[in-house]
Amino acid sequence: MHHVSYYKKGYPRPQQFRADYEILNGKWNFAFDENNDKDYSGGVSGQLEINVPFVYQTEASGINVQKRVDCVWYSREVVLDAKQVAGDVLLHFEGSDYKTEVWVNGKRAGEDKGAYHRLTFDVTPFVQEGKNVVAVKVTDDYDVEKPRGKQRWKDENFGCWYVDTTGIYKTVWMEFVSHSRLENLSVRGSVDTNSITVTYDAVNCCYADGDYQVRTSVTYEGKPVAEITCPLTAETGGTALWLGGEAHLWETGCGRLYELSVTLIKDGKEIDNIRSYCGVRKIEAKEGKILLNGKPLYQKLVLDQGYWKGSDLTPPSEEALVKDITDMMDMGFNGARKHQKVEDERFLYYADLYGYLVWAEMPSMYKNTEKSRAVFAEEWTLAVLQQKNHPCVITWVPFNESWGIEDVLFDVTVQNFVNDVYHLTKLLDDTRPVITNDGWEHTLSDVLTIHNYEQDGKTLHSWYDTLEKCCAHNWPEGRKGAFANGYGYKGQPVMITEFGGTAFVKDTVGINWGYGQGVKDDEEFLRRFEGLVTAIDDIPFMCGYCYTQVTDVQHEVNGLEDENHQPKFPKEKIRAILQKRGR
Image 1: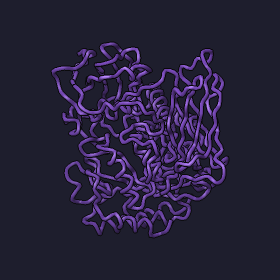
Image 2 (image 1 turned 180 degrees about the horizontal axis):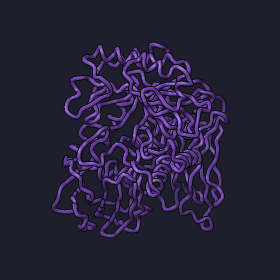
Image 3 (image 1 turned 120 degrees about the horizontal axis):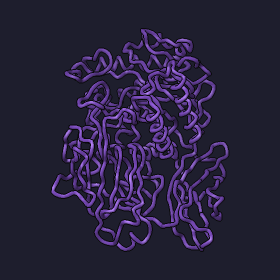
Image 4 (image 1 turned 90 degrees about the vertical axis):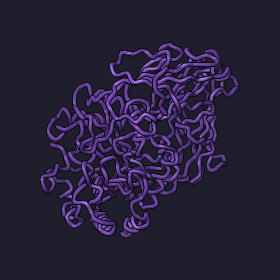
C-alpha cells in the first residue's frame, strides 16, 4: 500500500485536498442543555470538557453518559493569523447529529441538518486575526422520521439497535481558501475511453474582472500522464484527459490510482489548487453476473457496522480504520458492506488504496411519511455526492430489509417512492449498480439480494439452489420473498448479502445475542462457517455473499472479531475456508 503523494495523516477529505487547513479536534468546552433554553452562543464556560469528535455517550469523549439529552453546546477558542483570514475561511463538520447551529465571536454563522454528510459553514465575515470563539449548538431526538441507522430510539438497547449518537462525531476543521476557487470536484475514470473526466464548480469567479484558466494534470506513480489548460468561462466546468497507452486499472486487492492536480489560474497567477486521485475501473450488473473491468467478480463481502468499543460510530484512530480493512483482507474477504452508516471518508481512502470493495448504504428511517421521504431523499443525495468519487464504492444501497418502507410489498405509493430513489441515484451516478431494498421485497433493483440466517449449510443450499427458488415471492418457513407485488426477476445477478451471524454460547448471556443456536468452541464455529460458505459457493449462478459481521457491536456478539476488534480465530483459518472453492 502506497499513499498518494500529498497524503497528510488525519486529513479528513482525501479526494479534495488543499494545503491550508487546521484540525480542530481535541478539548472543547461542553454543556448539556436539557430544556433547550440556554444561550451559550458567546461560548461555554464553567461546565464540562469534551474530547471532540467523540459524542458525550462514549468513554472516549471523557464524559461517558448514556442518558438522552436532546440539546448540547460546544465552544473553543481558535487563534488565526493574518494569512489565514486574508481569504475565505470555511468551517467543516465531517459529521454532526442532527441539527447543527454555529456562532463565531457571538455572531450567528448558520445552521444545517443531517447526520450523514459534511456540513460546511462559510465563517469569513465573522472571523478575525487573533483569538476567535467558535460556539456550536446541536439538537437531536428520538425521531424515527429521519435517517438514524442503528441508533436506538428508546432509552435502552434493543434488537440490533445501539446507543444513540448526539452531537459532533467526526472531525471538525477549518479550511483557508481563495475567495475565487473551485468546489465540488468530481473525477471519473473510464475504461471504455481510457480517460479521466474532471468536473467542478467555479465559485466567486467574476469573468469581467480577469482571465481565468484551469490547469488539470494527471500523474501515475509520480510520472506525468496528461495535462491540459482550458479557459474558464460561465459555460465551462470540466475537461476530459486521455491517458494514452494501456490504462492502469483499479482491481480488487490492487488499488492502482492516478493522481490529479487541478489549479485555478487568474491573469497568469495560481489562486487555488486541489489535489485528488482517481481509479479507472468499470462495474456492471449484466446478464446475471457482476463484472469488474469486463470480468466476472465474485464478491466475498463482510458486513461492517463501523462501531468501536468506547467510541461507538467514531473510529478511535486512523490506524483503526486501516486495521479493519487489512484484517478482513487477511481473512480472505475482498470487500465490505458498510451497514447503516456513512463511514469516515478516510476509510474509503484506504479502501481505494488497498483495492477493497465497498457497498455504500444509507442509514434507515423507521417511519414512512411525506416528511420522512423528503428528509431521506435530501440526505441520500448528499451522501452519494460525497462518496461517488471513490473507486472502491461499487454499489449503492439506499434501503435495507424494508426498514422505513414496511409496506413496500403491496403499497404502490411506497413502491413509487422506492423507485424514485432508484432513479434519483442513477441520476446522481449512472456508473454503479443500485440495490433499492437489500434483503427482500425488491422493486427496481440491479441485483437480487437475499438475507437468511439459517445456520445449517445444507438447508441454506437447498432453499436457494435454483433461480426459481431465489426469485420466489414467498421463501421457506414463512420468510419474506424476493419481490414486491407487481415485480419479478429481470435477469439480475443474485447474491446472499446477509448470512451467518453465529455467536458463541458463552457470549449470549443477558441481552447479548447472535443468530441461531450458538456454538460451543472454535472448531464448531469453523465447521458451521465452512458449511455456510460452501453452501453458497456451490450454487453456480451466485455472484457472492456478505457474511455478518466484522466485529461484535455492544449486545450483538456475532462478529469475527470481538468488540475491541481483535480476531476470535486465527485469520488464516477463515482465509483457508474462503479460498477453498477457488471462487
